[in-house]
Image (cartoon, rainbow, N blue to C red; front, side, top):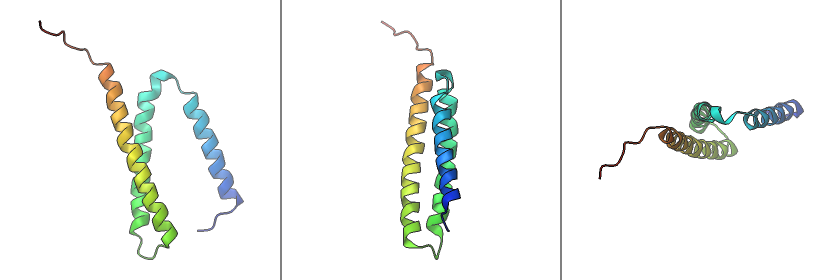
Length: 98
């Protein structure tokens, strides 16, 4: 795979647009946004596993694939835990019995 200026430009543009999009999201939409980012992270895990499974992959690709699997899995699990915690805040609590 060859990286050139166009690839770097697309990456920087995507990073900037993603940051601006998430920064301007209303607080009411954070839970659906977290669900969407969890889905994207799951796709990243699958892609990284495919890279790790390549028979003739260079060592750098394998190392970066391992880092991607680790980071995406941490992001995925913590995203689900945060979403679950946020949803528990909206459940009605039963009154305590004396």
